Length: 287
Length: 321
Image 1 (cartoon, chains in turn blue, cyan):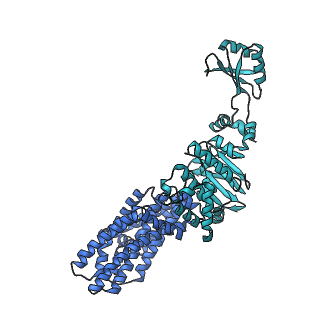
Image 2: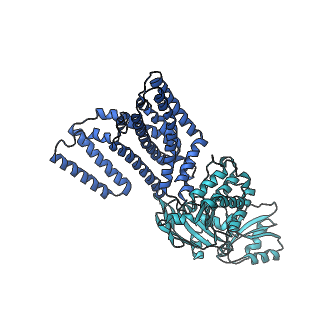
Image 3: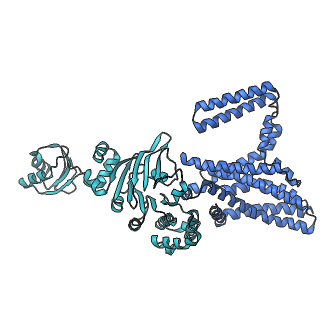
């Protein structure tokens, strides 16, 4: 794992990717700091972190596009997978390398906080909270990028799809506020989830019976719940979308609130995406 | 040492490896021979744990590769069809990385790399970027990679593909020298290569092993003198009349002559009826100069072509059994 991480970290700076990432990130961050804090005489540092959140949209695809797709394209995955290391080592090593580049870059922006601290009043704990949230959010996005990279054939498509996945997460909040909450559409949504689940079962087991059982069980559950409590599905769509809303959860951190549940959410999101990545890489060997 | 039992690999409806079983003993050098797409690479990818088989098992000294992948992978060095190299690293950095993922103890890394460099002859490019090396050197770096983990089994997939003739000879010599210390399985679609390096050859076609043995025995077993090609310095009717008196000829076909003033003819006899001696005597009786007389399919090359193009597949299985 460490060997993979070190190699990957060095590759970032042996190819232009690392420099482009750092340059882009720090250029835009510097711009926002100069105009938001310095010229405005504002010592409100967490607003700076909030302002540069959108950078993830461009920076994460850049950071993660190569990670696994390039191994496969260059066929170096044959070396990794036939060596006495596990897929977990490979995926974690790659993820940590991307995190390391991200953290080093972020460390530079800590200088801005020092500038604010020297020349103004820096809300220290609020800033620390902001950074923790920022890093946790970053790890979630990077794990998503790692997964996309694992299922992409080349780095261009990996970057492209990561960008759109992130964009989708960005718009999730908007969708959530306009999503229908009435019982009919909520029930249809619940049915759609059941069908999706059945489709997933079929894709994995190729068994019509197993999928049919899922459909029947799901339908029975929906009907039963509906009979027990007719309005139980109200607001289901925004609620489900809310589970995936990474950005909403960041708001607390900018206020300096460090809520355990949000921390656990981000860490779970990261772990689940990395776990799925490991499964995808392993599954490929059975294809 | 390596035991493969009923190995099958399907890609959807396509069967890449079809119920293959074989054993390789310690110290053997075995060549997989077959046309492209015969299932050589797939078999090797399963042996090394890169792919999983649809059915069947691979054992190395009784250890199943699926049950203890790390233990088995430690004992194997693999050079895939395209060497798994990172272009942006130097040879030094690359081999150091390989040592780390092959779990080479830290204090041995230096020696291991040193030995590998000299064994495959890449010491002079040690500090160059792998991406800037020629195909021949890349192949050697790939080979050095396979040696790094100090394995006892080497699996080399088309180690000479894409090299120029001089490099091919060098790599062949190298592999022959490795054969003294390792159990080697290599694949190729070039017959002379395999018959030259490997004391044992397995001919693979359509995912099945169609022949298995040492190259000379294989050629002997599959030798069939029922088709003879002759070249005579005479016109066609004279040549025909010379052979007309012979018994057991089932077919005569005139081939395009390669020299002017000669006639080339394919004479087919009943199975396993060797006509060569009688043909020679018939021509000498008529004083027709016979300047060429050879058995078609005498070379392993031709046997291999026939085997893998399926023309005589059924016969071979019998001969092999």
